[in-house]
Image (cartoon, rainbow over all chains, first blue to last red; front, side, top):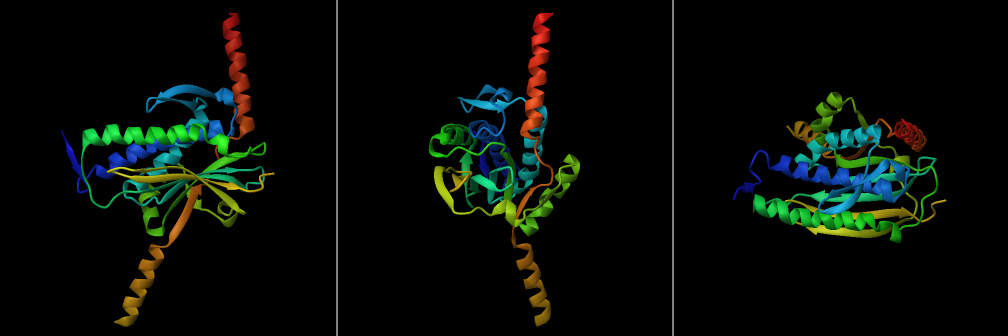
Amino acid sequence: MTTLTRQDLNFGQVVADILCEFLEVAIHLILYVREVYPSGIFQKRKKYNVPVQMSCHPELNQYIQDTLHCVKPLIEKNDAEKVVVVIMDKEHHPVERFVFEMSQPPLLSISSDTLLSHVEQLLRAFILKISVCDAVLNNNPPGCSFTVLVHTRDAATRNMEKVQVIKDFPWIVADEQEVHMQEPRLIPLKTMTSDIVKMQLYVEERAQKT
Amino acid sequence: GASKEQAELHQSSASDKKVILLPCKNPPSRERVQLWLEARKQYESLQKGL
């Protein structure tokens, strides 16, 4: 049995790998459940031992992968406070925000066996919550699109500069229009606390969507 | 002296400033994806007809 500690050089990478894989599945599922794209592009797959819907559109899949490749160095260094999937109306105003708030505990000493089984169970619960979240959300107006925001610190942005160039996928600071939402309604979906990461997911929904 | 400390403090608080980032590029539009889906369906029906 292998024991990982915070001091291990690759510990941050392990956490980032796990979280980015999860975020990829979560983003596909959000886009399916909230009908941002036609349901015909999604195929049923099995992730975390539960059925999920994943897009088979090459350009969209590449976009999601490139996004997460750029976010990964921030997660690795515990510098991504929030990763937010924003659904926007035709005027590019946010109607819904799926907020993944994450932090890594400062001290830990865990076994790799514990890590794999326990974390997978916890992430499965998030996926199940996302798959039924349409029951607690109002319908979105037609013609919605999406973007992904990452909340970080100015100094940490250096960590993602290299990958932006390699992937030809530049990032910019969000402006007020992309961030501000009028009278949001907060819907908590799931919280998890594990040895490697603490995460909570909630949705902020605009009161008047149309 | 004091001014150097102030400058360092200013620099450190500036680099600790919270920022929200987003990709410059947009994901494919719904219309673009819809066109791709229709083309794929046509291709698949043609394949079945062969």
